[in-house]
Length: 188
Ligand code: IMP
Ligand code: MG
Image 1 (cartoon, rainbow, N blue to C red):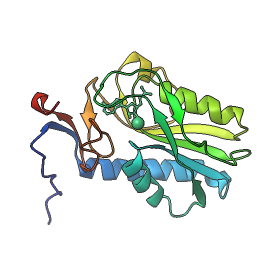
Image 2 (cartoon, rainbow, N blue to C red):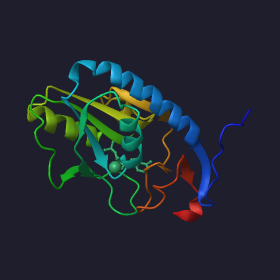
Image 3 (cartoon, rainbow, N blue to C red):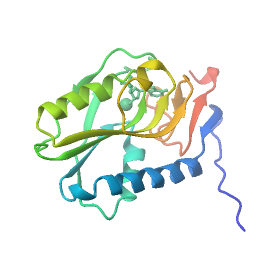
């Protein structure tokens, strides 16, 4: 028997909260539920990954849904600038996803924190005639603002800590780590 694959940890990481093997297993389970829930929407499902944080998560999630015909339309929402680690409100940056009318929209984001991103996008897509709008996040912080924001699919609930990896960044770094972890104080 092989032992489970262990992540090699970058020296700037303090502790691993979600190892890559756990992410992979959870992504498969989420895709299974999503595939079943959207069986009626074949060909009318639009997945909207929120850039850049959900790049890795969305890529893995849609690959685990090969049985569904779906479209992918990227969107970018700015909430943090540079090295800031506290929220400052959200705004859609650049072009909006097109042709959403009558489509079932699934927003995919890396983490649910203040809830500003999901509230903004949900309202935007509903007002543009989507048949339904749901959200899927890899991580949700166990804080009132996040727990109080509607979100249909959640990968993992984590504590109120700043995390990086698997798409999540600090000053645009660490997105390429295959696991989610906290940063050492010296790396900030
Ligand atoms: P919300 O709009 O406040 O819910 O935050 C969503 C966005 O904030 C995410 O897509 C991330 O880009 C960013 N964010 C929130 N918490 C963290 C974190 O712990 N690490 C890295 N980025 C975060
Ligand atoms: Mg983001």
